Amino acid sequence: MTKKAEVSSEIGNPPLQLAEAIEEYVAQGGVINVVPEGETGEAALDAEKDAFPADADALMRAKIEQLKGLVAKGAGVSALQYSLRMNRKEIKRLANENGLKILYSRPVRGSRLPRVRDTPVIDDTVAGHAMHYSTLGYTVAEIAQLLDLSVREVWNIGKAYRFEFKHEPFFDSSVPPFSDVPQT
Image (cartoon, rainbow, N blue to C red; front, side):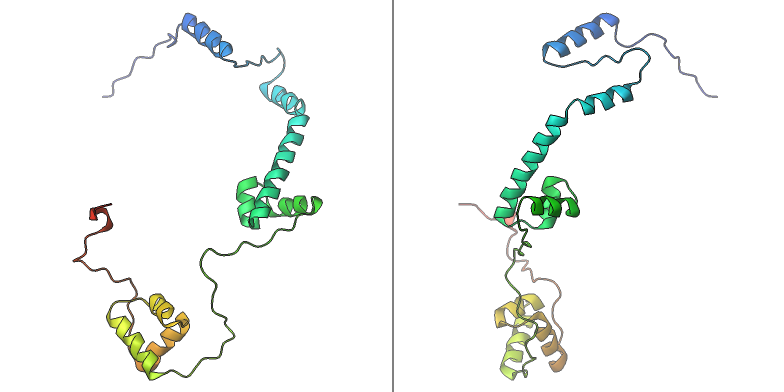
């Protein structure tokens, strides 16, 4: 058997509290738009949008100023999309209209080694260093940085000398984690 919950026809807020809440809202600067009888709320919203074309111009001027500032800082198109909330085509059009040139943003990390470099002959000394760093627990990227090689060259050393590299960084369990280190 199921129990039926009683439904009350009484409204939760008495009209007196509602009137006080409306007066308080208007006193704080709130505006209540009254929809004329016979019209819908959507028609009132359309009329409200048409009443503020000056705000659209002000918004566009603010976006242009923000675009100028971000381009001067070196922001790329993707960053501009996020900041201005516009698509790429609109951003490029706006930049062209205002004489701005959008440079592609540079990556945060250092520049890569050139790819056109010929593969050097693998030196036994360098391979020995790579093996040594591998046994110490360094990753391929760390070994490449230490030996001033590309990651591909380090992998090729591993293939040529038939040894494997660690895939994860080495963590010493005897060293306490960062949260336990006393701060000075």
